[in-house]
Structures are given as structure tokens and as C-alpha cells.
Length: 363
Image (tube, rainbow, N blue to C red):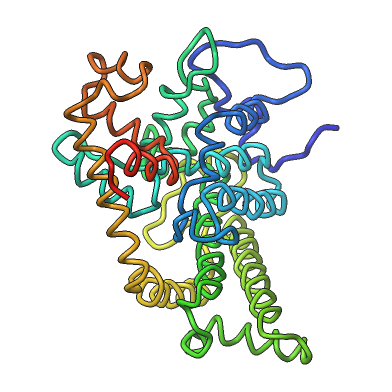
């Protein structure tokens, strides 16, 4: 069955070239093949044991990079379908967007960036591209996954390609990433006991939806109301995004893909929340930064994680022979420090802790 896309969507004929030419598949589009290559990659499987906020071994109920990526994909696909965008491309970018994250979440990235600053720095978005273009070794004819131009463009989160805007498919992944982590960090923060409801009720967007949930479910227990509130918050944000994007597409007369790629405005983005919702979400984010991400227990956990990364990094710089052979083979071509960063970025939380304890002798 042919899927009817809007003319401003990325079609299977747009940006579908690959670095290495391959024959088309009789049953899957190019973007479906990209998605499948990502799902079957080692880097994707490792996301299961990589920190979102809480280190993986602290509890089975907390989000990981893998569950986060699946949640982003689910939200982004809903938006894409509602706007008649390319759902396959959207899903692909969403599932791949965190492949370059090192162990221990943002604490691990901060530590690696500081250690790599004299050697080109470290950024998880750039590392994601490195994973899919270089580091994955699954095919005899090329390194990487040989993804389409559209997928690679979508993963270059902070760069305009050839002076063009991102596609709407890539833009909605970016904003659905924000929706997902705001809400599941709320959920995990409450689950952990770090966030409490009395303080959350000072935040307008939470308080309004919490009151609505209580009114609609009078006999529900507190835990059920928390889950219901978060579901309603996600729905509120996604609905606001879809409706505002539809308004912007009509307002700026977006008819075809070229209009998206060449869109220019100093004040607005095609993919955005309404102003009122943006303000409310920014207040929620400030609350999370103050009361969750900077909570003494989380900061203590992050400080220990940074120490582990630094310890492994310093050891490997002095003893690169300790890395697997496939990394040692790239020392001359890519340089010692970049190869060490690649190896550490590919670690899961538990593998990094294994190195810390079994190899470096520190518990």
C-alpha cells in the first residue's frame, strides 16, 4: 500500500543516496533499511545498559538510553503521522539519535569532553555520526552502516547542512526528545524519592494537569495519579506541538520540501510549541535542573561516574594495548586519544564499572 506523504515531507526519492551504492530492496524502503541497520547494531544494543539519569544498576524501573530512544521514537512517529511526514525516516533518526552517548549519561560526556578538550573534544552527537559512519563493523564492503543522506543529515543535530534547515522529520525528533526526557525524568525523579509532589505543585504546568487528573479520578491512589498526570502531560505537549506546527505550515505557506529547507525567520521555528506552552515547559525544566539534576545524591553519583571515566581514560592512554585489537588497529590512522575516546564511549555503565573494579582494582 502506497503511503501518501505531504509534499513538504521527505520522500523516498529525497536524500536517499548512500556513500556506497547498493541495490534497492524489493520489500523495504531505503529509510526502513536504515532503521533496521540501526536496530541490529551493537551500539543500539548497548543502550540498554547506559544511564539516562540514574545509573543502570540502581534499579530496574529507571529509564535507560534504550528505553528513552524507544519513547522518543513513539512520540515522534505520532507527530510525523499526524503531519503526513515520512514516518520511517522519523523513526530511524529517533532510534539512532543517542548511539554516541558514553556510559553514565551527561556526567560521562562531561568527563570525556574535558579529557579530550586538547584533542578535538567530545560531543555525543558527533560521536553518533562516528558510530554509524566508521565504528560499526557489520558489512564486508564498507565501514559503518552506509546510511542514507537523509538519516545522516537528521543526526547532525546542531549543524545546518549546505546552508539548509533540517527536515521536519529531524526537527520533530529533536523536540520529541525533549518531551520524552522532561516527562520520564519527572517519573524517575518521583520514583527515586528525590522529587516531591508538594514542590512540583508549585510548577504551573504540573499543577494544572495534576488537578485535572485528581478531578477525573477521585478514587485513584497517589501512584496512579502520578502516572496519569505524566501521560496527560505528554499528550498535552504532543498535541500542542502538532497543532502549532500545522498552524505554522499554513501561516508560512509551506508547500514543498524546498520551503522547509530554505525557511528563514528570526523569531519562529516551524517545529515548535506555542509560546505559552514553551514558557510553561521552560519553568518545568528549571525545576528539574534545580531539584533533580543538581540534587546532592545525583551530583555525588555523577562525580563518581566522572572519576571512573577519567581513571579508565588515563590508564588506556598509557596502556593502549589493553584495548581490543580492532581499536589498536586504528591507533595510527585515528590517533591515540580519539581511539581511546571511541572505546570508552562504546562502553556500557556496567562494563565501565567492570574495568574500574576488575582491571584497575578499584571498587
